[in-house]
Image (cartoon, rainbow, N blue to C red; front, side):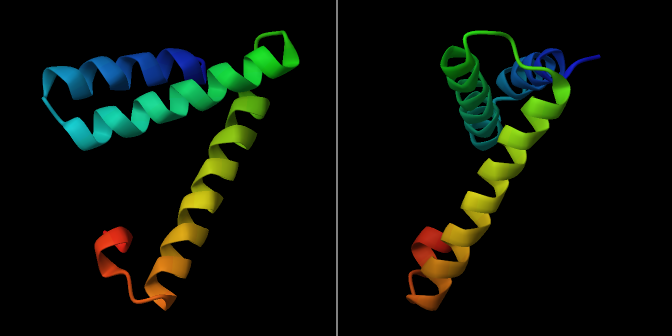
Length: 77
């Protein structure tokens, strides 16, 4: 099963469970993947999807680290 199909399943599961945080995260991933498809003007393969997802994870980890250094625990959470 490809990554987009798994994300669709996760989005449905999060919506049914009324898990707003997980639903928001999955939607954010789907949006980033969709934007990358628009940029490339073609569907992404699984390797490209993983590349986009890992870049997003790295951005979030860097942000958390910077907020922690700045003493902004409200944003770290």
